[in-house]
Length: 145
Image 1 (cartoon, rainbow, N blue to C red):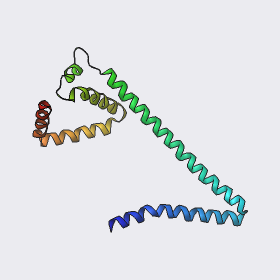
Image 2: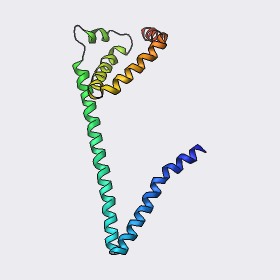
Image 3: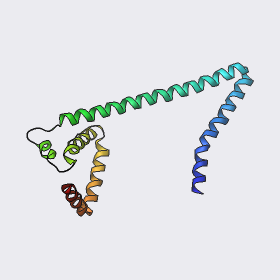
Image 4: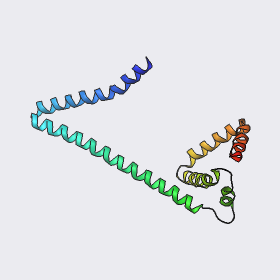
């Protein structure tokens, strides 16, 4: 039953657009002429499609820039002779390679979205505070690999 309600809720806006376009076309056809009504409706759809394409391109460009920023931060945090990065590269298993990248990603996240990142870290800390044994098991398993 819940799936049916979700389908109906998703179909509602599509049906509204169909009836809205039909009403717009009839109104324009009665007010002006059929070709003008069709041209106006085509212009509306062309404008909506152009706007959707522009938004998609902007979102893709932003995603690409974020990936480049994370890669640049990871390259900047590459292992050196001393410091946290050097200590992290000595971690067992694949943690030595992924930990500096994770820290670089966290640094970029704190710069771009500090409130959301802080909330996420506080929530993660609360979970770890309630069940610290999970981390110890995870570290033992990583050391065994």
